[in-house]
Image (cartoon, rainbow, N blue to C red; front, side):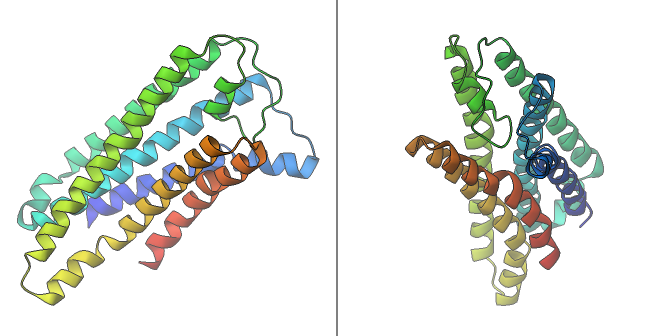
Length: 237
């Protein structure tokens, strides 16, 4: 269980940091009835929000691979998922997340005439691009490319891992063995479903409605509720 707990500890740390980028400022705004944020604060918030969001995706994908190795190759699990590989995977995730958020933040900083009023409860990357007066073609290209790279590719990896897991479980002769194997995946499946379903809900909400208030409310589910439910789900398990 050591690799699983290692990934869980990193996921917990990332979720704490993820919510810390938006919730404290939101609570201060509610308490003081002031919806003001400095330009430097907005840029910093945008950087760390995209950073920890990308890390969430990477860690969930690695945890799917961990479950795949544990169920489909149990005799080689300790050899494949050794401490060196686990540490390397997490280190690469932190580096890639940092490079991604740095690229996206620098792309926003090159824009001019960004509206001083953001119809959201935090500085969201997409909102910042939409409010710019200058040409945002390259920003949109980078944004869609990163969405495919960080959204579709990891999801495809997770689905592939679970397709192999289902195939392995179906090949087990013992009903107790099937139940035990599937029970080890329930928590991860719940977290992945919650993460991607709320993310898809935010995307569809912003694409189908032009109401900024509706989009902000939907984003609360993705940025606040989901990270807070992750430790609850794993603790219940």
